[in-house]
Length: 443
Image (cartoon, rainbow, N blue to C red; front, side, top):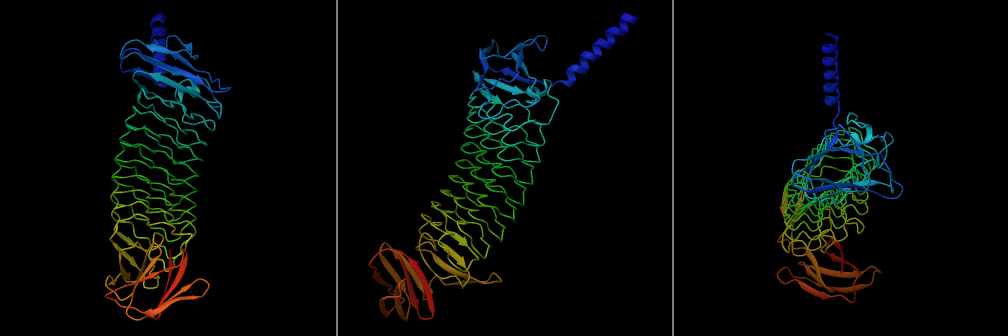
């Protein structure tokens, strides 16, 4: 009876242990797949593997471990309570063949996969860097990040098609930086529930994920410096952008966010009314399928806020703004190489000036009033544009052109049906007076 009771207790202990552990596991998806560990600098974390379901464990050195047959498994664990890696001394797996990872990456920390606390900065930095053979990511259960803890974790994992769940709601500096950079087979992004950003937290997270078709929701309403910088750059299959509800900007928060997203046809709404330095700089650069820009409702510009924002959007044909002054250091080249024809909506107070840094050359202009009523001035009597050193003026009345030094360069009478073409002496900024209207033009 005692022996039977002991046997039952022993069996229960085995079951408890089995259910308590959630080892990081590598499963071969083709015969002869291999894995190993590479240690950089002085990195030397404790790491062990088992090929017999945990009955025996062996230290994982630099040697490659072979999974002979498809379906063979290796359990991975470590005792690293202060962190698995640091920087620049860090460790990462290497793989050949095809290998699916499962179980919790946290078994590298506590030996069991129970903890959800990441103990150090750079903890899993580059853990699967360039593992092109990795077909499935392991579980990442941590709910709070540390500085660069997942940075470059799956960078260049070109066989990875789906990202793991990322349940963290508390982010840290660059925690997801380059996490899936160059994962060219990734078709599905994880949910990103965090609502409070940190500097560079999503920097280049999905950059060059050329198979990604849909972005995850981004619910944050308050930005931090460079938080979304280059997040989806060169995601050439991305057709739909996420909603961007943030109303509190920070420097360069959307910098290069959708650069090179050549399949993106519609931009998300941008509800912020107060801008920050470079907040939208290069945001939609070279989005060649974009036809309509979001309404830009901010009334005051800041340096670099719209720098190159729509440059290279060759199909963009509609822009609507609410600002009333041109600022050279706010809109530099913002509409360079957009569509040759289109409609620009603005308030009457905004000077009608044409060029890559103002209103696109060849576009019609419509005035928008506070009640959103629109006045069509596409055939209005006043229009100024440039081509090289030529200054074109369409105006039925007296026209005067001055240099910035105040010297008069031209004075004459214009015609609506036949725009005058004035050859300017040099590149620079000129002031055009047409009756009571004044325009500043840069050649």
